[in-house]
Image (cartoon, rainbow, N blue to C red; front, side):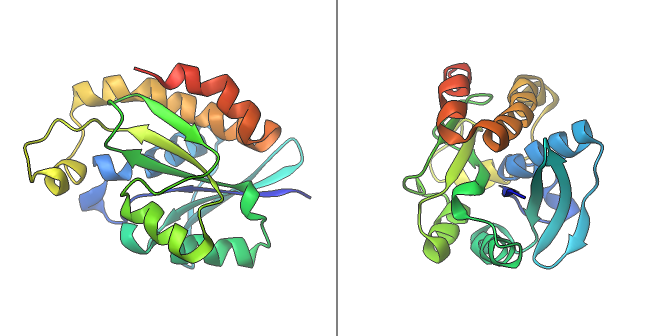
Length: 190
């Protein structure tokens, strides 16, 4: 059976819930809700399992904190013997406007600490979905921005992208990264 690992990046703990840095977690929560599955507290993360047309899918929300996300990703890839080409990592992205997104087959970490740690441990040859959080902060205010909470209005703008994130995960599992990029990247531009 083909296996896939879908990892949403964020920080564990109630104080981080609803923050921009936890947008990856929010996409997985939307997927789990739509699929009527639940996360369990396991090694290095909260994990939920489902299958899509005979393909086994593991959803992972690392509990390692953002800067050590690679530990969780590497562990679950090895534990479940999942090919790195079947890994999709979902993260927040300052360089994209709120509600925009971009799907890529590989590449640099773009200065994102979570992606950077994953790259350090497994290389950069894995798919990633970057969810725009905007960058409307004063000079030196980046940390406060990414750890800041979404407003009700922000969530109204973000929700369509979260919903599309659910569809993108399904497409990635069923069609692969190239077909999914062709289908969805044009929808991610703001």
